[in-house]
Length: 169
Image 1 (cartoon, rainbow, N blue to C red):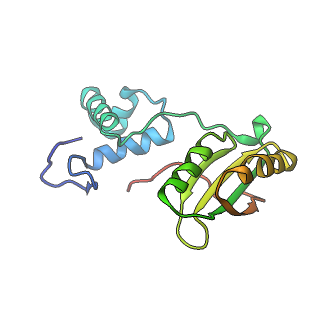
Image 2 (cartoon, rainbow, N blue to C red):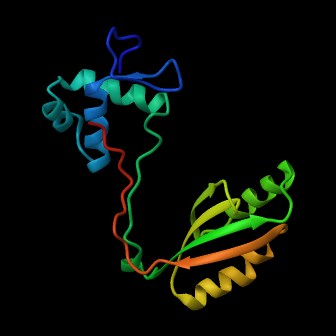
Image 3 (tube, rainbow, N blue to C red):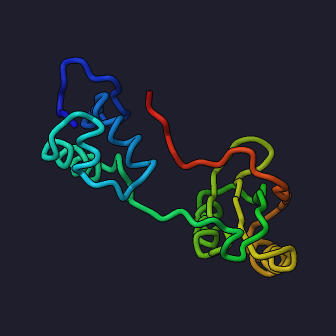
């Protein structure tokens, strides 16, 4: 990652972060396999290991790379039901919204939560064992959160595309 390259491919909203084609190539490789060694990456992007290591370290420090994770296949660990929940709040004050967010962050069943526009205020991605477990979550957790007005559940029947990769070309 360069501080101020003369011809950067992409400038982020953060003026201190400028990425070039090599940075994007490194990001593509790490998203495919975060366990790749610096030596393997350097061979693939045609740089020596030291600048690759420096680029990765700088992307970690600036928050371009948030963290390294292991992706688990839910069905293989007994989590067979995926649900998209649209949630609207009764009250839309800042305090009410923050209270909802705090409650959602404590719920292990919710793996993603987005603040959205339109008829609903939040979109949740929920993964649980089965319908009985979801019913318990819906009735005894989600619906019990103060200020929840309406919840609409959509059950995922099949996955057409699912990725966590941002592809840079």
